Length: 230
Image (cartoon, rainbow, N blue to C red; front, side, top):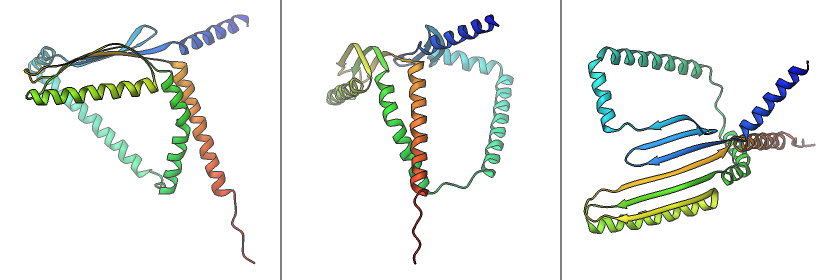
């Protein structure tokens, strides 16, 4: 039986280590968006916009194989029909709608539940390697100057908000103005890190606080019986 305990302890240790590792979201925004989500240094998801060349190649491929396009469309239509059927069945089995008072109580409980956990969660989010190179332009020189002022105000406001809510580390931000091209260009990059254990702990804390608030609301609503007249 000792080997079973050894295996169980090993599994528990692996889970604990996994929970204390961070999820990293690396974002690069130019004329195209490039987002990578990593866990323990391993890329688990990449979201990237197609370049014009890739779009052209994709369209060419579709044109060369129209039967595949039709097959994909039929498959999508079948999925949509099944989804609509399932939705219609759910509507038929829907419970009576909640009253406005019940909805307000639910909103109050949710707001109460998320107040402290959300603050703690944001305070543990790390936004690092913030770099931005933005050149603002406009239809004419006056519009370019006005857009430059707006962008400068927007950047300072966003940074002030982030400094108050998350752990922010800014590497370099450059803001310029182009009075001729009429085209605004930008290259923005940053990383967002958060430990799994922190996110899970805040989620459980939120659920506990919300459930406790809802129970308290139910008790206060039905706990005091009205007095009968003589």
